[in-house]
Amino acid sequence: MQDDALKGPDLTGGVEHAQFTDGKLLGHVGDDEVLLVQSGTDVFAVGAHCTHYHGPLADGLVVGNSIRCPWHHACFDLRTGEATQAPAFDPIARYKVEQRDGKIFVGGKIESRPANPHALNEAPDKIVIIGGGAAGFAAAEMLRRERFAGEIVMLSSEAAAPVDRPNLSKDYLAGSAQEDWIPLRPDDFYRDMKIDLRLGVEVTSIDVTGHAVVLKDGARLAYDRLLLATGAAPNRLSVPGADRPNVHVLRTLRDSNAIISNAKGARCAVVIGASFIGLEAAASLRARDIEVHVVGPEKIPMERVLGSEMGQCVRSLHEEHGVIFHLEEGVNAIDERGVVLKSGEVIAADLIVCGIGVRPRIALAEKAGLATDRGVVVDRYLQTSAPEIYAAGDIARWPDPHSGENIRVEHWVVAERQGQVAARNMLGAREVFDAVPFFWSQHYDIPINYVGHAERWDDIVVHGEIMAHDCLLEYRLNGKTLAVATIFRDGDSLKAAAAMEEGRAPV
Image 1 (cartoon, rainbow, N blue to C red):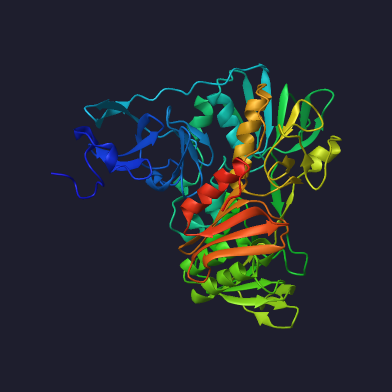
Image 2 (cartoon, rainbow, N blue to C red; image 1 turned 90 degrees about the vertical axis):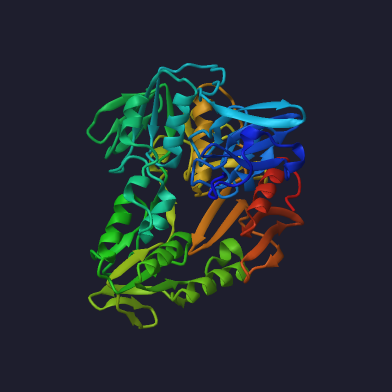
């Protein structure tokens, strides 16, 4: 008798092509949920869930011999199971498939094997990565996945090994994710992969001519290839009282833990800045039953990124959950009474979180004489003005083929994918970075997905109902759609990204 918890047919007994919907059929093999996927004349059987956040691949998009997760756009090779594009790194399982007598039968799991690496055109002896965030981790992981056998040294100024940073303002801050879920990999991963991860290390300069980085203690570390993945630093308030112990920024695991510790027993919190991270923090603190006030200079939250209607939707959503907004307002000081606004109003607060943006950490690049322009300038291979040095993540400004402009974005998935491409290119792959930018934001139970990049637009075309949380928005400039934002239209978000990749109109 079929377990009620398992969806679809028992695939070991055989199924017919007519049972497929949009080239997919969800079923099970024993206790495993398995997805059958048809691509051309081939049929693949793979694990039914994304290895990132367990997203349902049955709702994903098949592009050639790959399948993409509807939640955060991770991509998997159906032939090998390999996670070919972040944010997933682990492969999905594969199962034996046999077609006979007009039916498709699925057998046992195929023992996983390492994916075939790209042909390495270059074999440097030593690669140094400066940065322990998304781009740095993704690069180190990809180097080993590509069978790079040389030395990898990863220098991080942070106290903790690379973590799932988006979670620090979402489920982890809300108290619904455990701390052992937060590391991208356990400590023994770095030992087993022979990645020399050094925490709490400050790099003071780069000797471009001598191919070495100089550490704060004066030590020199030679490199054959260098990846700059220094990320961004949170902006801090410059008002009296900004250094009080109950005033926090949110960037690292230590920052999130400090806020969580301060939240214990707190009755009221003030979030300064109606940014994505500020509003995500507001939602997480409301989940802890803390009164939350949000202070920001704008008239409508997120209007600069999402437009006025979507911004109003975000505001209404937070107000429905009890958040109190103080917009077109600023902070004059923080004292023992709480947060003193420019209007003179005082908000008594036990806990204060600043989410007033970040700035790219480009001082090392500037000091080394690398080309910079509000970020580190890279070419389409993510190579800086120094041939042996690459840059990825929040600091990189690259030529985006989709918008036709040089852009820099501060998105987690972009940083990871740039780290992966930079890793292959440090090995001589000459792979163009042309991924469509993607980010997601979570506010209570409402997800916002965004693909593309629109720093400005002259028209927003709305499909569906924004306030009903069922919509797709096109951000257009001179008739061209540069970006698409969606709420609860995950499939449309995937299709838009795929269309942009192919140079087609996304809607």
